Structure formats: structure tokens, C-alpha cells
Amino acid sequence: MTAVSEHVGMADAVRITGFSASTLRRYVRLGRLEALETPGGHLRFEVAALDTLLKPARPTLAATTGKS
Image (tube, rainbow, N blue to C red; front, side, top):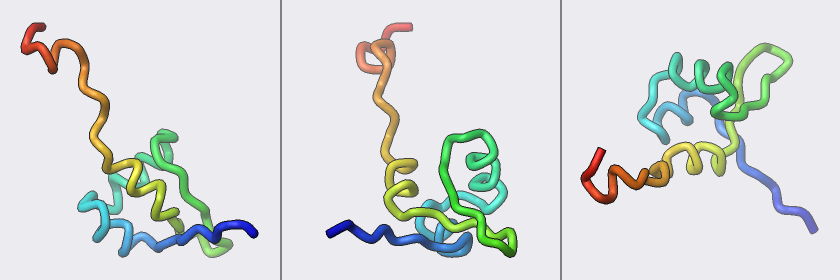
């Protein structure tokens, strides 16, 4: 049995992430976020991908030691 992934439209993606629609479109264009494009040209986002986007990036050594 395969897991069904949940997809949401732009309005829900904006609500979930707090990012603007233009930022989400830019992230898709830059390859930072994956999205499905419907035949009508609308973007659909996998909820798991949005969650991954919101996880903080791994801190650098300089950030953890306070040294630059």
C-alpha cells in the first residue's frame, strides 16, 4: 500500500508558511521548492515539502561558536 501525499493550493501554502505567493513562486523557479502545475497553470504544493522548507537550516560552525 502506498501513502497518499497531501497537496494544497497557493492560498493554503501561503497560510502554512507565512511566505508571500511571489516568494513561493520564486522558490519553485529556483528549485528550492517543488510544486505540481495543474493544466490551468496553478501550483499545488506537497504539505511535506512545505514543512521541509520551514525547518531551520543546519547552523554553521561560526553561528554555533559565535566566531566569524
